[in-house]
Length: 412
Image (cartoon, rainbow, N blue to C red):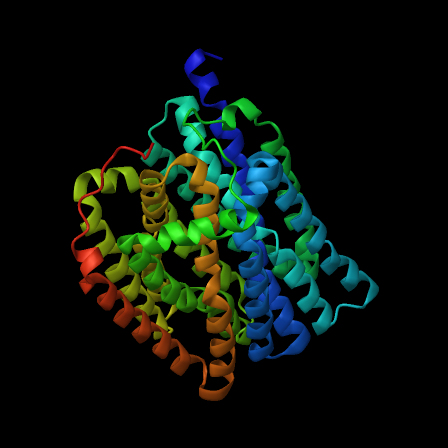
């Protein structure tokens, strides 16, 4: 192995962990709603469980930065994946004993959701030191990271749908456990030296409360990031219920798990392609045009899918939605890295993750009840139109309109 390939090995370990953890969560994302519909037969109950799972993630997410500061990114990443594996073990075991009830699904779905934001935050915090350690451009690494995450969401839904069809929803969790264990093992190969940054840290250690609120204070004080995240708050409340309630309910009613897996995989495929191309997009079109593409394309893709067209058109609109949204997350990560020093990244990324988890619980509750009260199609139309309106309002807002072209240097 030559010196150049050797220098990229830490990134390889980190991205293997990123990929398998993502695959596991992608399988869970379609398997738990399917399992809940089998057990309860109620979209409203499915929405309630997913909403409460989001609340548990929201409560834990702000503490991710504190945990990373105390125990390190590698330890937190491994802990999150191992505990996630342990939590989903309950589903196949309870199914084997005939004790898999709606309450059991609720309890263990909540338990498993606690650990997800810790893993996400830990892996994102690794990006800056790994880029510095391996001499990889940070924008390129951000795109690779989110591209691998997107790839996992191409593979995960297809794997989940296949296993649901072959062995049933409850037994599908055995593959989830295996993938979580691979993710934890891959992170274990990272050396502590690979995860240290040369940027100076503050001489005095802040209080726990100050650490807990620092990320929120930093994001709120930046008018551009504040506006962007408020828009994302609403869009996440729309998009995630579509993926975890609307589409599973629609395809479960027709007993077509493979079609569900294909649609979600195409969504992820579009996102993966554009995530990997993030650095190229940024260089060619600039920051403001990239934002316009994201909001407008995602809104039009969602609107097309809301008509529940034949599978061919559904896949086309899913591809448009995923492709448009793909560059957004690496773009947001890059903005945080550029505007805040590395020692603040764990707290800021924790706050950003909290924002992402804040609205979906409300959205899932409303969508679940909306499907039961006014029907699936009507609910989908309302979501699509709301997404379009919020996107337009975000794009005409002063902070986003006046945002200067991205600076390719990171914060120091």
